[in-house]
Image (tube, rainbow, N blue to C red):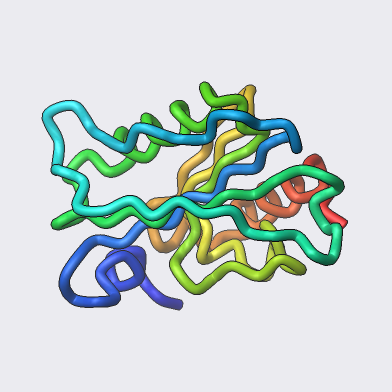
Length: 154
């Protein structure tokens, strides 16, 4: 299993984060502020919509935000929590962080890929698996599977 640190620092230059945000089809404002009070300057944010040609999202829209920082924040969970909250504030149904390169439309939040997902937010809760052992645990896998079912991915 790849460690969180290795996954985020894969290019040996920046800390690379991928946040996915699922919105209803009529979303108008999906621009998210990725600043972090007293934190690290954001080097780059590249947002783009992932086009659902196969109709797996049930008419919803999925955006990915590639975020680059100079290094991993010391208060990583707090930083991720803030960013997830900002996505939910923009009316996202769900938002999650997953390792870069871990995305596959047909395997959205699939339990077999749970070890590449390290933060998830729904309107009622946020959960984190920053610890490498937690990401590979049965409870985390079960949580990812139940989230996938709740979102009714096709």
